[in-house]
Image (tube, rainbow, N blue to C red; front, side):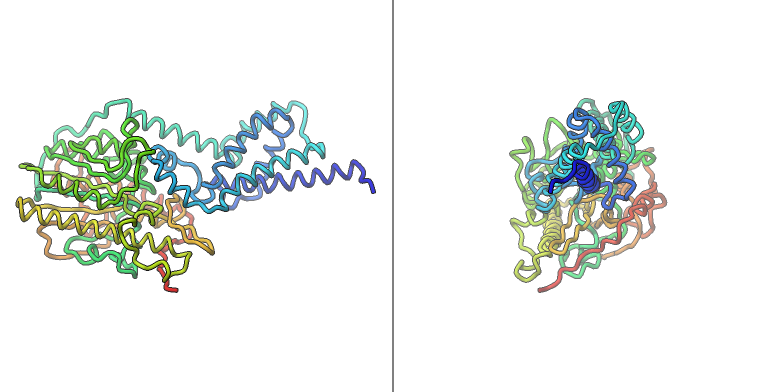
Length: 517
């Protein structure tokens, strides 16, 4: 039986519309903006595609490249969310080793999305031509008008957000790399500086509720849980990745626009009080193109980066490799005060790669396969706790030898979020998926501490540079002398940080307890 042409056309149109619907839905999911796109959002995109499909040239030379761009991002978008300033800034600050670890976090199923999306759109094009499905007369004008009216809407939001975030990062890097940053601190005074050496340890990706010191049932912080000093429960990061957070925490930020102010950075503030500064880092350093954090680090009097230069030559260094460097600094003859930063790699995803020289808390054979990443994560936190203990022991030895008193602070730049499937639990850096992403540990220990204090009080990361000044005993007209990072009282002003966190609509994302088999 020979089918009539009209039936063939109707069938082709039905197939075309079905392909278009599912292709539009998958493309929106892949952007990360719409984990569950509404019918209206899907139809908006489908309508735009129908307009572009009216012309072969417009479809292949305008629409199809946009589809390919969306499709290639889809493996990342469905796991980590939409493109943003934070992720694009991270691209500039990522070396080859980190890139491999980043893509290793993606499920192999993610990589099927580009093939399916592109395939469905091509099938739509084929069936639409077979069924003679077209919107006509003045096709180019219709397409231009559609783009104009939909520019900030669901179909094109991926492009507008990507463009905006890219321009923001580009301008920031231009400021850091092409112009000299002039300090605006002026001259500071030391009014109540108690210690000889001040050590600031910056952790990486360590979420507070995965620490035994904050109630996690596995004992992975023996030092932080028992040492004399001050433990703060309520410290909140400035952002959800290293650059977004630390550019606010290591400068006196613009609290209205939530931007870092590099002319009022922490290192320049400390140097303005006559203190010698050191920066020892296990994070990457590119040299020619600084990231915001390495640009601040470069303001230090002395700098040591374990990973530097060409990204292809970067290596997976252990945080323990910083200890001999610290010993070299402590051994230097010094009359005045010193400020030393240790920037760790901590629990950076993939956390299992942080444990090449440190044992896991549980043997992998003792736990279900889906919890392997959790085991690595809590073990990497224990390694950081061991790092804190070793730094403290070096400072004690130096005090006994050279009679230099000290105070040491540890905090993490940000936390992480979960992605849970029936077969795997991933702990990764994904903005907007967990309010607990902002919850970070904060601990201080000094050479004269003989008691332990634990305070539950909200502390905003946007006050951190001011807090560090008061910890050291630095006074400056631009600082608030009443700020106290280690008091039991909450910060009087968080500049909208709580409000930003409260707007996150994701369900609660508590720490996952590691079960036995």
